[in-house]
Image (cartoon, helix red, strand yellow):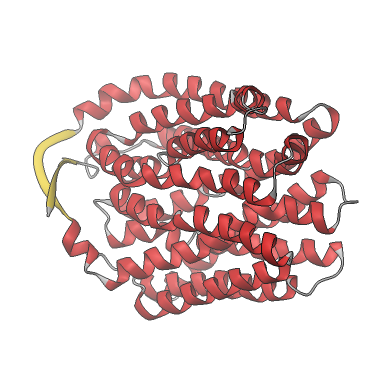
Amino acid sequence: MQMQIPLIQDEKTNSSWSRKERQKWFLSLLCGTCLIYATRTSVPLLMPIISKEKQWSKPDSGVILSSFFWGYTLTQVASGYISDRIGGQKVLLISALGWSMTTFFMPEVIELFSKDDTSVLLVAVVRTINGAFQGMHFPSMISLISQRLHETERASFFSLLTSGSALGTLLTGSLGSYLLENYNWVVVFQTLGGLSLAWAVLLSYHTLPFKEKAASTKSATNYSLPWLKLLKKPPFWSCVIGHACQNNCFFVLLSWMPMYFHDTFPEVKGWVVNMVPWLSMLPCTFFGKALSEKIIKAGYSITVTRKIIETICFLTEIISLLFLAKVETFQSAIICLAFIIGGSGFHNNAIAVNPSDLAPKHSGSVFGLMNTVGAIPGFLGVYFSGYILHVTHSWPVVFIFIAIIDALGCIVYLLFGSGQAII
């Protein structure tokens, strides 16, 4: 089973970003990653208020929260493949227009169907569509980076861009919480959606001079994308499984953390809950990057480096989750969650950049496939967590469940992970 893809010559100077272009695209992509996470986390932030107003149960909330990831899994592989073929910037623009518009009009969807018996299902469908558009963002971005940066620069560039996820969550936690407390949940959707639409418009102008240049760099030479060979490699599956297990932790907390604090510490201000834990992710991402570079300079291989950094991520999350299951004070809970979210910063410098190691010429497609499987915990883990809460009424059970999944991912990646090219 092989697919023919036009080869994009990134070793030619006319196809690589200049220093000025690199800076311009970094700032643009960082803003996009920030806004995509701001819109993604808006629903978890607002779910306690909306579910109370609309009288949705926890399983209903779980359906809506998890529905995003159904769509998120649908477009990963296709968008990565298409980005590798026609250019990531085009797919990135389509993605931006889609998720920004569905966020902006989400209040109309919720209000229009709120009195209908099928309201939860219809809102979940729109969230699925939103997830499908957001699922195109990262594969197209990593494909664009692979096409326009030298191989030695890609992992570092991409890992720094992933810090936009922390910035986006902080934007929701600060601005979103302020708007929610002083206005209402409708304004939160409209503000974040409006900012995202503005960025999409700027991106369209940003990519116009890029289109002609991108077209001129394509070669008639074709090469095959060996899917079967890739799927037979244990390092690829260790990357996929490790990513899925870590995503289970990240997505469950991303979706349910506001509800956890709302149930456990209802007296605490919303902006503290939705902002403070996420402050740890950005410095941990930079620290993980610096530590990776130091380990490599010390003479260790990419494989050893990726395993060390990913192990730090998993152990930090597992230990913090076990402590979180026993804490009784708000301060202790915040500290534990800060460590857990900080662990994701190390993940951004290990498994998240591993597709560029394993398949340098096919990173968009491989990342899309990895992120498709990695998004499965988004709907299964998030929904199952809602089911656990409905049956047991116990948050510690949820945290222990996440820790066990994390331990599985850590073991698999340590045994079979690799930083060497396999295709």
